[in-house]
Length: 187
Image (tube, rainbow, N blue to C red; front, side, top):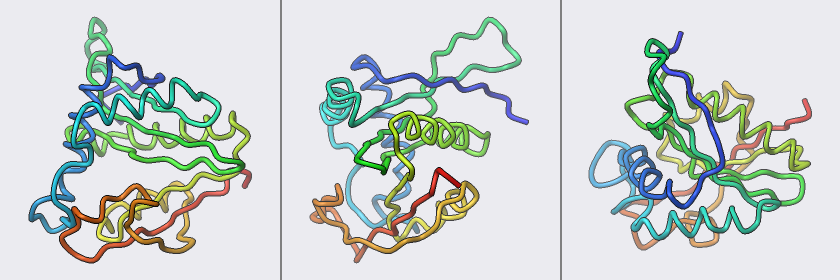
């Protein structure tokens, strides 16, 4: 049972500061010396980068989407949906919906919000005539692979951490690559 109820909607430019903060909190385990670290710096360097991602989604709704999820305490009926607890950027290309960044606020992880977001991603992908969903997970994030496996994703290969895969290789502090995961939505 979860003690939060999350609701999602397309992001607006007003959400950018909250998205910037949440994504960088969620991806903090990847930077600066932790056991999962492989890079220097944050996922987003500036809030303007988030604004660009959101603007692209707003300008091209047939090829991309950027969603935010809010929550409130289910024990407090007067609570407003005000806390951003999750985000996902989606790209629709032919029959494939790629997504990422995908993040849940560390304070809310383990409460079913990530699963709720994944189900919404799958629904949006199908609405955009996609038959598959795909995500690239950096090889050092082995902690994430069981989550995706539980949701039907399977490894289909690897790819380099480079600009072509939305990775700034100048920030890498150890050799890294992406594990490519895919889910068939028609099964």
